[in-house]
Image 1 (cartoon, rainbow, N blue to C red):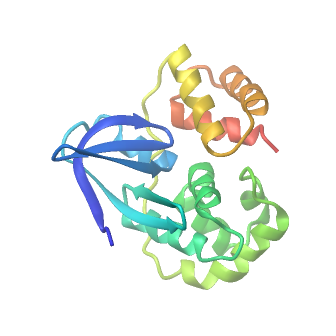
Image 2: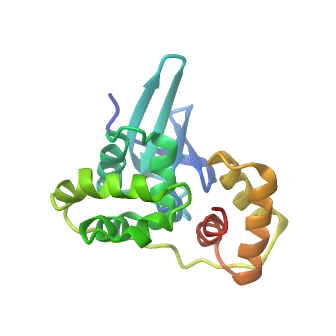
Length: 199
């Protein structure tokens, strides 16, 4: 139904972006990779989108690159993998590392993603190994922005984990550990590190 949405960013968080298109604000769920790509782009922003339709819910998922959207669509085509898990995968490992892990049947890399167990990782390899080869190599830029610890940054990281389905108590502990190990890291890197502390 929708191919892409272009407009001005009026809100950008690690898990979502709100884009103003001629006075209409679109709430779009995004991965950390897309979050990183959108930082600093206040005008003429464009994201490729996928609309997920449920009985009582409509949700848009946005991606800075078509390849990331393709991987997302492959993931949600697998039984038991929904949009939330797919976004966790894309946020936790990124497109390039995910393709490498599937292509090389690297269970260690896949199970390092929060929420992905051995059985799910094996299913990903079995169902996606051949399909992954169809996509051209892409690049993932985790972002180079850095900064000091602020309450706003901490809240962004915590909110992202809660939005991914984790309880506030366990998410808070993971955020604290992430800040301890990388106090100057950008939000998207801190979220990925925090995810590693949640098992």
